[in-house]
Length: 214
Image (tube, rainbow, N blue to C red):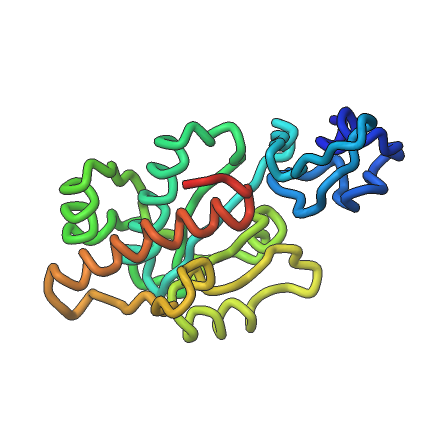
C-alpha cells in the first residue's frame, strides 16, 4: 500500500516507510500534520487525504470484569454492535469477554444487562467463562472494567503474553470517569450508566486504534 504522501509530494517511499511523513506504510494513515510542496510551487495539507488499513491486519479484543455476567458481556455486545453499525466488522478477527473469577462460568449474562442492551437495540449472546493464560497471546487487547480487574490480570498474565492490558475507560474522553463500576448489587440505573460508558469507550477505542471518525 503506497503512502498517501507519495502521489502528491514526489517523496520516495522505501519498502516499509515514507521518508516524508515517517509513517509505516503497513499501518493506517488517517492524518499527517505536514504540508507538502507541490511541483508547481503550491502546497496542500496531507491530512486531506486518507488511506485505509490493509484488510488482513485484523484486531482481536477481549473485555474482562469479575464474573463475566454484567459489565464485560455488555461491553462486548456494545462494542460488536458499534463495529457492525460502522461497517468495521472485517477489521476484527475476534471480540469476546470473560471474567477474572469462575463464579458464573457457563451462565448467561445478568438479565438486567440483557434488558438494558436490548432496550437500545443491542443484542447479547454470551455465556460466562474465566480468563485463560492463552488469552494473553490470542488477543491483541484485553480491556478491563476496574483497577481490581487490572491488578488480577497483571498478576496472571504470562511472561510471553503479548496483549495490551488496560482499563477500557482509558479510551474515554478527557475528564470522563475511567472506572466501570460493578452494578450487580444496585438497581437498573447502574446498568444504564455502564451501557453509556461502553458506548463512549467503544467509540474512543475505534478513534484511537483504527483512526476512524465516529
